[in-house]
Image (cartoon, rainbow, N blue to C red; front, side, top):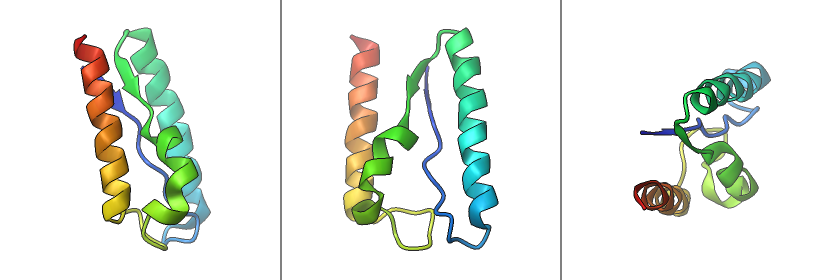
Length: 84
């Protein structure tokens, strides 16, 4: 099993900064539970954050084609690492 963190919510979306902050806290809690139970973690939040300007649609939680390609490659790498 591999747990993947939730990707960032832009602070300028409908739900605003509170939703963006909630994702950070939920990811932190979930990661600690996964770590406690030795579940592999694919930290997509940290991975995609430096690429948000070119990968995430403006004022939207969804990604453009380039963003999904980046995330897909990251997920594939995490799976390959887990099955080795």
